[in-house]
Length: 202
Figure 1: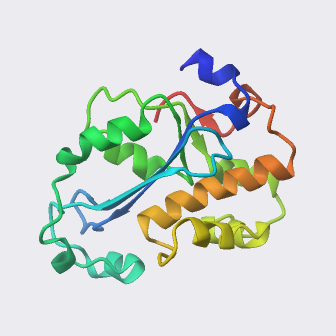
Figure 2: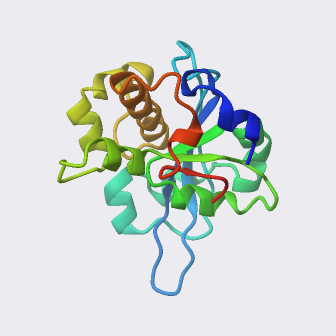
């Protein structure tokens, strides 16, 4: 784990929030990404973070159950780039930053398509929300953002998008972290204070 990142205040760290939407998978079939969104902030409260979103050519047709959630169909991906071709952009956006996601196991799994990428450390806003708001019955990204009142902030950052869009959900993870850090006055805390939500790699 990058010791320099571990020791810097949360407010001063570079962050890269990431989310994937997937094609879904039939029994015995491997799932694959169909959209990726990244929000790169050079500090937690960076007023102008970099935004990146792209559809991804699927390895198999998008399952109906997945399309019902995110609205992405196989026909929409006819001219989408191959996942491997996005490596230069993803390397630039994620490199040297704390990678952020809400239960980001799927994100980490899809990034394993790039062996030896070395991204991390990782912050899981789901674990952070569970610790900060233990009384909530639902710690899903949309529910926690609703409780904290940060959904309008997400909508302002990525207008004309909504939940289960990869860029919107990535932005929501970042805004959720901002809200928790500010509300708990943790701007000067470090990743070392949050071992339950931080992993060296995933």
